[in-house]
Image (cartoon, rainbow, N blue to C red):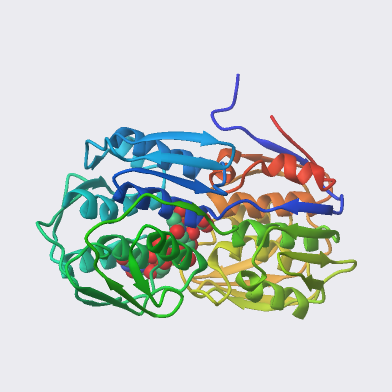
Length: 419
Ligand SMILES: CC(=O)N[C@H]1[C@@H](OP(=O)(O)OP(=O)(O)OC[C@H]2O[C@@H](n3ccc(=O)[nH]c3=O)[C@H](O)[C@@H]2O)O[C@H](CO)[C@@H](O)[C@@H]1O
Ligand SMILES: C=C(OP(=O)(O)O)C(=O)O
């Protein structure tokens, strides 16, 4: 009988060798797609990753009345016949990014009813800053029966200071402010590459956004947004995952179609640990011929070390010589994968947001479960490096953020199959 979720089977111990082309950024794609709903016409988004989170967002758009058409990695979105401002639970619960429908539908219709979002479960993932911002812009917002209901006859620009640096709130409030009356200033804004990419997409639609990529974003409201054609940035987390896997397997990999600046915190850390990393204009070469040194990382908002690479990096640190310390500076409980790693021989002690990692000579293959997207990516890195066979259940979780990860790894010499 077919498993409820497909599993990945990995024969470990083969160094990754060769080139891998990185797809578009998941966290840019899931912001830009709903943003396209704000133009009454047909937009084209290029370089989209063909991943489960994008398909889940597509499903939401179809339920709202949009028409979509794929041509390889390009998506045409026709939002002319949008007929609903209600995004239902069964499609919204699959992804975290469904919260962007609130900002986009508020701007399009002046009203939005969106179920509470889903996404990776690592502790509470509040959206109070989103709601605080919508209310500051003049929207009435209430939560009823698990639905976020927002209404605004007219959104009016204002100054919003985010209590915490939040990617989602920063992007969502940009979506709500682009056609508000007057100017909106978002202070303590997130600076991630996908925040900048979404601002650039909105500006290509006729929005007037300045300062994205800094902690103060200024949005001058406009009367109309226009359909556009736009190619999103490459995925820094997909690229970083392959760079870490190259090191974990003592391999030699070139990740292509990347923006090296987006990976500077990882590149610097890998060099500190003893890997050879050569940066080119749109690719990065990683060479690792021996056991790396231990290091410490603390995940922080961009340009700090990205939390979405924390699980993968912890696997690499598990194989280094010496003791490493990992501090999760963004999420309260993002170590659920550690119990699975321990089944493979990792020596990790978790206290709250800190994990102390004692390096081991090698990991052993085991049967493990991918509890979420990056936990699954971490277990893949571990299985590639381990001695023997690793079976990863719930592998569909990995497909949320990685396009064709098994075939890409096979092309790099890994022995991996989906069963
Ligand atoms: C779809 C998407 O883009 N997901 C990314 C997004 O998630 P997401 O947008 O959920 O993450 P945020 O940047 O908002 O969260 C950062 C921190 O702020 C807190 N917070 C956030 C919002 C809020 O209203 N109140 C609040 O307290 C969170 O609990 C967390 O501690 O950024 C995270 C941090 O880079 C990444 O791990 C996710 O991959
Ligand atoms: C946490 C992640 O995704 P999401 O916020 O969509 O759950 C991630 O991409 O690592």
